[in-house]
Amino acid sequence: MGSGKTLVGALVAERSHAPFFDLDIMVEDQAGMPVADIFATHSEAAFRAVEKEVLPRALQPGAVVALGGGVVIDDDNWALISGAATTVYLEAPFDTLWSRIRDTPGRPLVAHRKRSEVEALFERRRPRYEEAAHRIDARRGPSAVADEVMKLWSA
Image 1 (cartoon, rainbow, N blue to C red):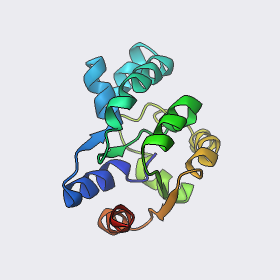
Image 2: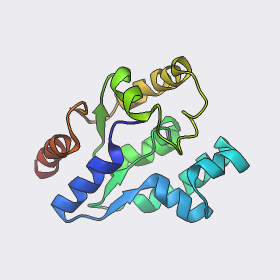
Image 3: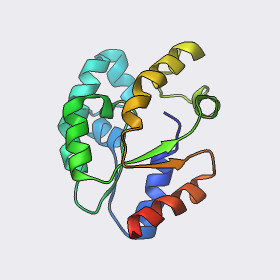
Image 4: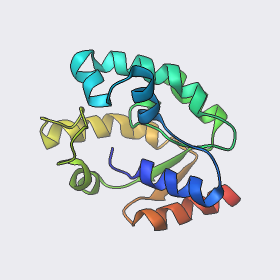
């Protein structure tokens, strides 16, 4: 949710010569439509079902994966993710995240919602995010955040 997962993930994958998977793009490819359209024409539950289906394909050994912000809430998904990958929480205060996402199109869980509703969603998810093996301050630019992730990669 605005932490820079996709951009940072792509940078880390490029620097490490690893495959990169963005879970939202994988869902779009599987469903044949953008995430926003899945939500609009089907439902969030339909999106989550496709997300759960494609998740195991993303978790290839040595790959960098940008996970959607809600995928980790499902306990089965989290068990799969944390068992197969080194997890990194790109952490930033909600004010920072909100400034990045509030006017971004294509975010169905943000569009037409009040700030307080989006913040409540973030707060419900945050305890799971905090279970990640590592935390990196995502308030800095994507390159600096990717540098920190690379330190974990090579450790």
